Length: 487
Image 1: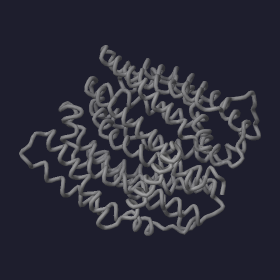
Image 2: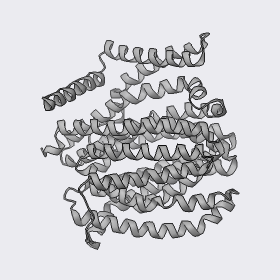
Image 3: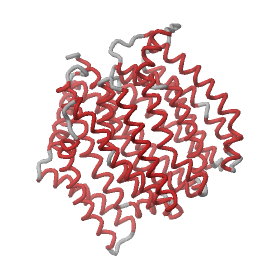
Image 4: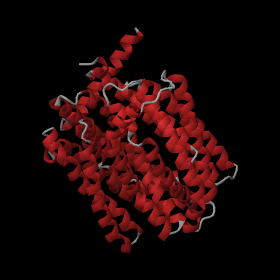
């Protein structure tokens, strides 16, 4: 086996990725708390609308090429440079389109502020094109230790800029400044920490080869991004920016946690799985380890956050954000399903079956749109609940191809993750009743968190949950290796 894809190297890369994500997301979490206390829900609503258009444009800029570069076994300097130049050309065309259509978007939403915000924030398309190729290089060669420095430095710098701008009374522009600074900081730090440099090389033939794989991911990414943000667009039209701000805040906290853990595992797994794409048995073993480990970590966090949502929002965001509590609870259940989604999709991508990936995305989006159409007349909370229903159905669809590709059925997957789910639900059921104690809000929250951790870890030990033992062994091995190196 290639040394860079050995079990030890994969786990070392995973730990560095987890450190990077947990460090950056932890700081970002603190920054978001400070900004939410300084800014108004309607200001977050405006940024939420703008980000939909930025995210859609970024799908075209990246065009699935970043994943194609990781998946291609023999990707070289010509491939990486060609993708960068093409991405920058696409970014230029899209920026021009966004610049001139911004007034129409503002008129549609009856928010004149959208014009300058959309034009300024779209500058991130150019920076994102460069970062996308750099991140593909980092992921392909599993240089996640390098990414740790860039991400941590960027989130600290952009956080300080955003907070200072918010304290200065700049309102929504504080969020714009934070986004721009973050992207630019990542690009600058990666330039100095990663050895790859673009060269004056371009090959239409290489681009065409990569696009044959990436085009399906482009279509899938466009569908997924448009579908994922369709609710944001609709809520922004039907309801006030403040309502959209509550919806956005409720989604962000569980999203931060899940993207930290599940995203770390999956970003390491794609290049690792791709390297073993000719060995189906090995791919299944690696996929199973990913889905079991991420579920063990994510389930208790999502159940716990749903249970402590009200005191958490009161203390962290203040009472002006209490309307976000129901959304936060709903999205906790939605994001708890992510390990099933991402593990299956990464395995399909690693096997080079982007055709299956695209077909599944189309089917899922059709079903999701039907559910969205049914939920629209019943209000904003039912719209959010519809996303949970759609997510449950999508787990069946995402898992179905891997029965044939890897002999890993949906039933097997649920058998693997069920122990973690059961003890997480037991933990949540116990700590829920603490809310009726006659204590201060902050005392109840602290008690729920610490007792919840104690119960979950205790149950994992008592019932000898496989993933718990695996994580403990991995941490001990990592510590031992670090101590051996220091000696």
